[in-house]
Image (cartoon, rainbow, N blue to C red):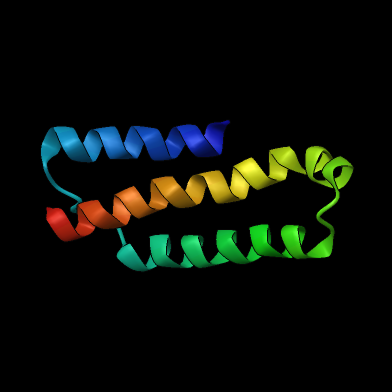
Length: 79
């Protein structure tokens, strides 16, 4: 929850100040890559409903943040 919340707070702050100054784009690119590969390894391991339900918190934590990181990457481009 804190991991998701930190991204939401950063997106909001960037929007308020209309800038991404002080943030490193490479950090977010690497975070996207890491979260995508982590989520993919869970999905490739087993696709049974029981397994996926058990791993839902990890999937939300990794793949859910990817969407927020993509918004941040868009903000890097836009601002």
